[in-house]
Image (tube, rainbow, N blue to C red; front, side, top):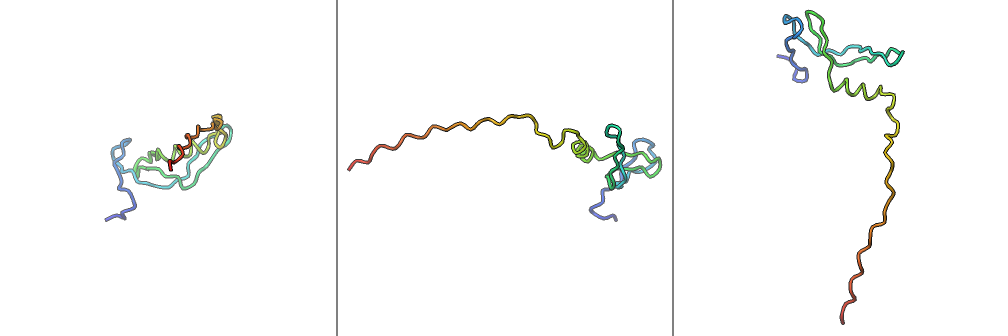
Length: 95
């Protein structure tokens, strides 16, 4: 029986002989002319052929962080505040 927090291995679609296990690896990618390394990156790795399939959410997150425009304003201009019309004052009470 495996730990409930560890996902179950799945068959490898590359070699059909091995099982894909979740591992935390060092991921390498190029950003322009710079080599970027990310430690403890989640990936499914085959225990027979070594094929790797990266977690899509993690790749999206990393792509967003490495985007050269990250942190820059989006270019949306603020809409100036418009004064809202005030409701008419209630009629005076009759006495």
